[in-house]
Image (cartoon, rainbow, N blue to C red):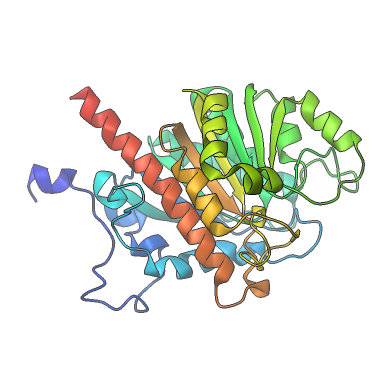
Length: 326
């Protein structure tokens, strides 16, 4: 193999030669990490949902997203980029976490993320429930310092405890603020809606530094204006994006654990993400896909396209950084 071949990213299986429905379901039919050795972006699953408070099933979300991603194609016209040609993206398999011990699972996810980020890769994580965002943020902060956070979700996920448990899918961002791993000058929830336990929930959230863009705000102001506001809030800080698929309306994402009426459309979510392409995206996750409640892969398809847009942003930035260094 020539040096030029070694420097050329290995992309997806050619769907004109092997049907999309044939073969193993890696993300976007990309090579496994062990097939390429190293990757610029590692797509990794975390099949864990022991932190949920209502419907279980997100432990099966990563593989559902992979199955739905078979139809993704190598050129992204919305961002005018071929992400899998710009950087080496590979499927790193799953992080196997203890389903019976949340504290141990959190430690396992953090250690595995440390190892992947230690190779120089950025992470595109497929959950799993939202508990996993905390160990992922811990790991990212070790590398970049406190990071800006955009949290797409119907819910705040800044509550204190559930049944006395500190680590659940409703508490990761309170823990992250307490641990000092978030840049509290650049935090925002996007797509929130629905009933709360009380007004104090909003008061506490504001004290932690979060801004809120509700799903109603997106409906009234439009995706472009919202994306512009978020870009201004984030600036050039290292950014982590965490996406609970329930930020989408149940019409667009029925397969999730805690659905709320009145959410975003999949089109609005994708357009907002495309509007963030200039931000310094260091890693991201898409969580809370519960395929047992899905219909015709509606939720998994939305999640696969969401991960594709995030991967494209990271690939473009990696390529641009390399070009600038030459």
